[in-house]
Amino acid sequence: MFSFFYNKMTEASNYYVDWSRASALLKSGNHRYTAQEIMVRGFIVGVTGVAAYLGAYLNDEKNSPLSDLTVAIASGTLGMIISHIAVIAPMMKKRHGMQVEGDQFHKEIIAKIQLISPPISNECHHSINTVIESIFKMSVDHDKHVGASQLLGRRKNLLSKISASLDSDQFDPEFWKQDAASIIASLQEKPAHNYPKMRS
Image (tube, rainbow, N blue to C red):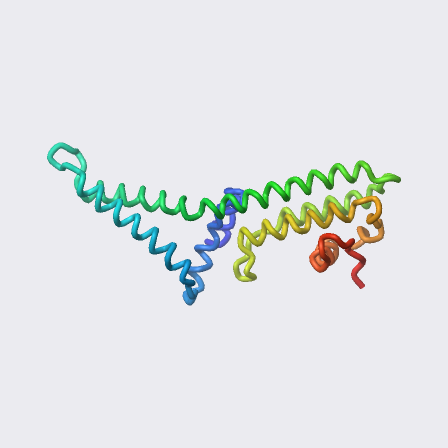
C-alpha cells in the first residue's frame, strides 16, 4: 500500500524526487550506508540542529507570541527542508537532463516515422506506439534496483535506440512484428548505434 503511494508521489514529481527510495530503505532494515551517505545525512541533521538552536536562541519570549520550543521546531523544520533541497538539487538537475533528452528522442521518433519511405503500415505504426507507451509506463522498483535515475536513464536509452532503428538505412518492418515485451528486451540487449535484430 505504502509503496504504491510513494510511487505515485515519485511519478507526480516527474521522477525528479524519488520518494519510493525512502520507503525501500525503511523496509530493508539492513541498508549499509556509504561514507558519502553518512556525510549527507550528517549535514542535514547538523543544519536542522543549528537552525533549531538559533531559532530558540534568537526568539524573545517576552515580546513574541511564540515559545522558544515552537520557534525551535519551526526553524528546525525549515532548516531540514533547505538542507534537503541543497542535497538533492544536483540529482534533480541530472534527472531533469535525462528527462529532456528522453523527450527529445521521443520527438525524433515521431518525426522519423513521417519521413520513412515507403510509409510504414498501420500495424507497424501501432506496434511502435505500443512499445513507446510501455516504456513510459515503466515505474520505479527498488526491489529490482530500479530507482528514479535508473528509470529515466533506461527510458532515455530505449527511446534513443528506437530513434536509431527508424533511420532509413536501419529500419526493418519485421522487427516491429514482435510483441512489445520482446521488442523492449531486444532493444535493451543492443548498443544504441546498432540496429536491434529479431530475437530468436
